[in-house]
Figure 1 (cartoon, rainbow, N blue to C red):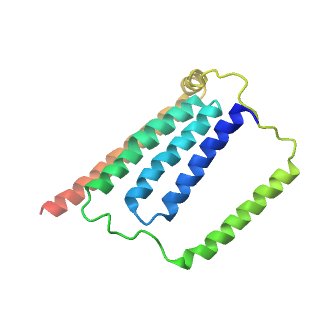
Figure 2: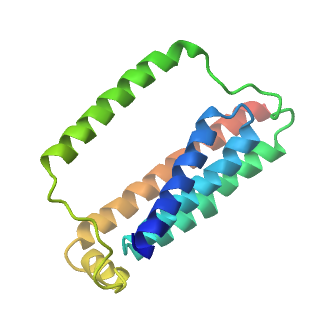
Length: 170
């Protein structure tokens, strides 16, 4: 077993174990902090795959933005630590059935595609230059339209929030 394999299994174990704790923990603070380790594990796997742009986006957006916002929301809310976030046992049977179907599908795919070879990337060249060139040449129209769509969504969210704030103020 090579060093690459060991590091991959380490990141996979960190990701799976912390994701399991996120789902099964009764304490929302513990779930939020374990979500941090889940995101770090996924970022590590992206780095191993040679996808540096996706790894940086994962780090900045999920860990730097969403998770920090979630942690501040949990910590600044009064009496949030006493909330029981575990659902009942009603959802266990559909979850087990879904996991069984997914496991069977993945096993069948792996059984029929045994010639797949997983190896590290041949070159660790940055992918950001290629992505930047594609976004500013071939996909510039789509890039600009998505920017306009996000601007419209932001204006709509601010308008809705302002309307609700005005109603609360009156």
